[in-house]
Image (cartoon, rainbow, N blue to C red; front, side, top):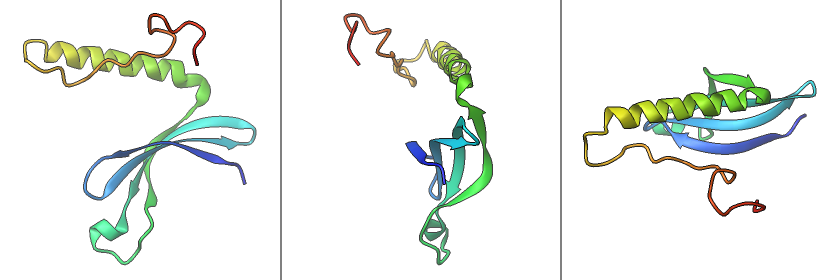
Length: 105
C-alpha cells in the first residue's frame, strides 16, 4: 500500500476536520482535501475519524494553479475588508519570496 503523507488538519466545525494529504496511486502523486467526521463528537460510539465523500483530489502538478487561486481569493477578501481595522487574512510568503532567504530551505 502506498504511503499517505498528512500535510494538515483544519477544524471545520465541532465534528468535522478537513485533512490535507499527499498520496500516490499508480505511480502518480495526488493532493487530497477531504472532510472527515469525528463520530465521538456526534454522539456515536466510534472513536476514529471517518473520511467522507466530500472533498477534492488534485494531481500534484496542479498545485501552482491552486496556490494562485488561493492567493487571488485572499487578495479579494483583503479588498473586501480594506476599510476595516483588522485584516482577516494574513499574507503568506513562500521562502522564495522572502527577502534575504536566498539559498535557505
